[in-house]
Length: 121
Image: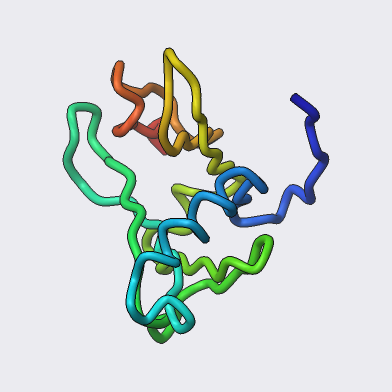
């Protein structure tokens, strides 16, 4: 796998593989042309926070708006600090498949990788 350098101030990155999968999933939606991928964190999960990925009709006021490989991505202001520098990839293998988020802010994660804790402070 080739590692791509990215600016440290990038909020988050969607890999080309993840962007392709999002496009496939969006194509199944009736109003795909106007949809955005919303990336968020929510309280809960076995480690404190959990990730949320889903389609939304548009960005909300105050959202951070990004675009990767033609996929519009939005992040709400509450979630942004917890996702700073994260990379979203899509894995399609025998052992592991699905979206995977590599988050440098996570001090620890649960075994399934869907929830995480951040360091205090």
